[in-house]
Structure formats: C-alpha cells, structure tokens
Image (cartoon, rainbow, N blue to C red; front, side):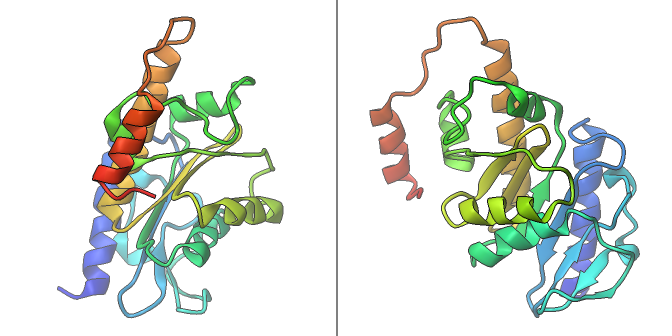
Length: 213
C-alpha cells in the first residue's frame, strides 16, 4: 500500500468515525492531510464525512494547486492557513460540532482563551483556545484571522462556526478536536455552577511535564 493510498483510506476512516458519532452533521466539516512527498489531500466540497470516497479526495500539489480529485471545500483556506504557520502540522480537522459551536456563540467568553482548564487532557491536547472573530463562510479575511493565531495555537474556535485543529498526525488532530468537543460539553453543563478548574500552577506543571507550548 502506498503512502497516498494509506492517507486516502485514513481520511475516509476518520471522517466516518466523526460523522457516525454525530460530531459534524450533513455535509459540514472537512479534513486534510499533508503528504510525505509534498502536497495535500483534502475532503471535497459538499460531501458528507460519513461517506467519503477515497478516490475522489481533492489533491493539491506542494504549491497548493488543485491537481486531482473533486473540487475542494470552500474552506480549504482554513487548512492552508494552519499549514503555512505550523511546520509540524501533518493534518487539520475542522468540524461544526454542536457543543464547541455553542460555546463559540456565548457572549461572555474570553476571546484569548475561550474555556477554562477543566481537565488535564484538555490542556494536554488543546491547550489555549482563542476565539476567531466572525466572518462569513469563505471570506478571505477569515483566512488572515486564523493565520494570525496559528503560529501560537494549534487549535482555534471560529465564532458562530466551529473548531479548527491541527495535529502532528491525523489521529492527534482527531483526538484533540474530540477532546475540545467533550470539554465544551462539560463547560456548557457546568454553566451557573461554581467551577473548580485546574489552578495556574497545575496548568504550568502539565506544560512542563509534557513539554507543551
């Protein structure tokens, strides 16, 4: 099995897993992977992540030109904004997951770090989560806003839209976006309750232990 075939199959497998568990409805959400030989694979426009045909994935060359497969998602720029600023990024997952999107609509969150440090695994897999201001889907200004944050954050939350997460592998991006969604669910469940978040000292200890930036 070639690297290209393996990457195609992995995208289809992860997409089906995310869709089957209700993490992104309809034709929402998109996935991309950086190829070892250069270039990227990305889910096409207007497809359901639950029924990806690996052979029809959009294929980009190392210069970011669409060279094969179906027409790419109109949100391809979100992925390229992450890759441009993060040399370690090997995959990007963008979802319209319900709880994370709900948090992105709250009026009183801290735009520099949307959710508190509720669990150790949230800090380990997501870290600080900034809120990107609202722009209409496909607006080039959204690309600039994501790019401005991507060098310092591998996960961002788009206002009234959903999360974008980069990872050093597709599985790490998947696990991080799933952890983000579960933490968003906890955060919403705990509204109007007094929280016992991790202390700054506990967060700093996690960052030292696991070499987190």
